[in-house]
Amino acid sequence: MIAMGSRGHGLAVGVGILVALAVGCAAPVPRATAPAAPDAPAARADTAAPAPPASPPRTLQLGLANKTFTQVPQWAAETQGYFAAEGLNVEATYTSASTTIIAALVSGNMDIATTSPGNAILTRQKGANLVVVGGFVNRAMYNMIGLKGLHTLDDLRGRKIGVAGTSTGDSLLIREVMAAKGMRENDDYQFVRIGGTPERYNALFSGAIDAVTLLDPFNYAALDAGFPNLANVYDYVPEYVHAATSVNADWARQNEAALVGYLKAIIRGIRWTYDPANREAAIQLAIDNTGVERRFAEMALDEHTRVTAWPKDGLVNEKGLEWVINQAAAVGDLDPPYPTVQDVTDQSYTRKALAQLDQ
Image 1 (spheres, rainbow, N blue to C red):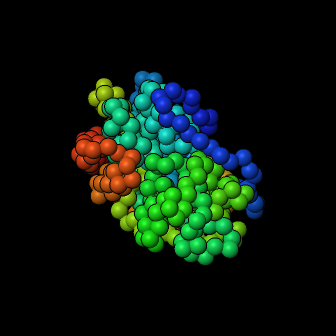
Image 2: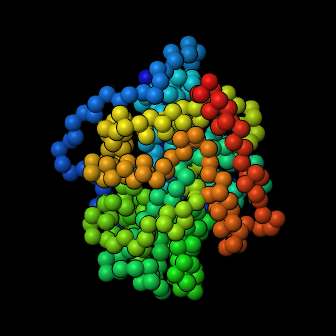
């Protein structure tokens, strides 16, 4: 049995990236209130896992933002022994913000970051040798949810929208969604930096802001509480990369075997999650790790499966990443000359992982 510890505290790393969390309220958390669900049936592994190596496992430090439904393949890689099969012990730290994860990656406190690629690209342009090596969530799985009484995106004119940061993936998406309605940041609406999905959820319930984008399961919990869905973000931005795997390029070269092993385990976790035979076990993973009600976990799995949110080959969606770069350039977050997808990616490690899995 392995593999993935979880440290829930933030990291204090001094690389000049500031994260503002502006919420201290107590909204209803989307937790189960019914009796505990029965034990899930035994899940079917994709293949028989090799015997764990005799040598002690290699520990990797993994940076993540929040415990949301999108992490199910990560938890599957742990519970199904896929990390252990690669001789890895993966310790996860949840920081609440993408910017904090990238800061930790730059400082060397993290080996791997799975988060919005936008901040990795911005930080790379400032001189850090960061590179995107694979995809994790290739869809914009957000709902734009407003205060009760609002009905459409047009109702957000002159309002405050809560975001994780001005250069994070959610803010780039919101600018695109609002532009489709002829609205521009600062002229027609204001951003308020709040934090990750749980913090934005609390801010909505407290009335601190007028609208937010929320991921599963928080979106379903807010909708269930009567807050209106103003937009499905992927309807406006079909090509997108919500989360990708980023590393320091020098670290990757020096630790190729560990990185390829990690990516193999993640791909196996993704494939396991899509397998209908593992549906009950996947739902239970979400319940156990997030406290989400079962019905919300079921809805989230159905939606992620329907739109193929996780890449079955583990590769980043290059068209989606190009959109992220173009949007960052359009709002002035990137300085010319603008990077290309090829400048900021090295998917050779994921392709090696695929070759080893499929041989």
